[in-house]
Structures are given as C-alpha cells and as structure tokens.
Image (cartoon, rainbow, N blue to C red; front, side, top):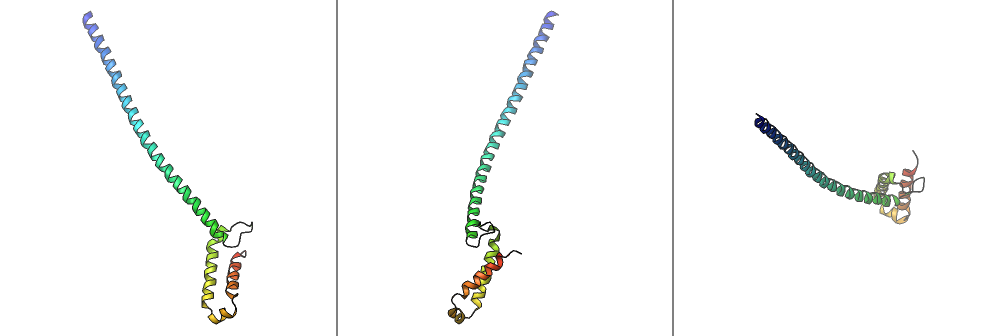
Length: 130
C-alpha cells in the first residue's frame, strides 16, 4: 500500500512538473509572439517617422514658397509678408492684366505708365480694409 501511495505521489509530482513546463512553454510562446508584434510595430513606427519627416520638410518648403510669393506684394499691417492675401493679390493682377490687354495699343504707346498705374490701382483696391 505504501508503495502504491508513493507511486501516486510520484505521478502527481511528475504531472505538476509537466503542468509547470506546459505553463512555462505557453508563457514563452506568448512572450515570443509579443516580441514579434513589438518588432513589427517598431518597423511601422520607423516608416511613420520617415513619412512625418518627409511631410515636415514639404510643409517647410510650402511655407517658404508662400512667404516668397507674399513678399512680391504689399506687406500686411505689421509690415510682414501678407500670406493671407496671396490669392486675392494674384486675382487683382490678373484683372489688371486683362484690362491692359483690352486697351488699344496706341493708348499704351502714348502713356507708357498706364499699365503700371492700372496694376498699382488694382493692388491698392485689394489692400483696402473691408
């Protein structure tokens, strides 16, 4: 009887060890899966970071271009390039060019400053507060 009890105890201990090993294998598998997921996410983060860097550089270039375009026109009330009126200024210039193109060539030859006056007046009308 003692022998049977001892064998049962040994078998129970073995099962406990095997159960512990099984649990350890499951934990190791879970850790490995988590490691691969982290590696995958790190790779995605690097791609996103590269995309953000590219977008930042593009935005910097667009800001510089906007200021350059705005610098071609009258400054705002603070003396800075009026970046908010670029499109309005371009429309005013197009309107002035259309008016110039509609004039008789003889009139332009008699008054060479006429085109300049039309363009300045068109821009001035855009700069007036509304």
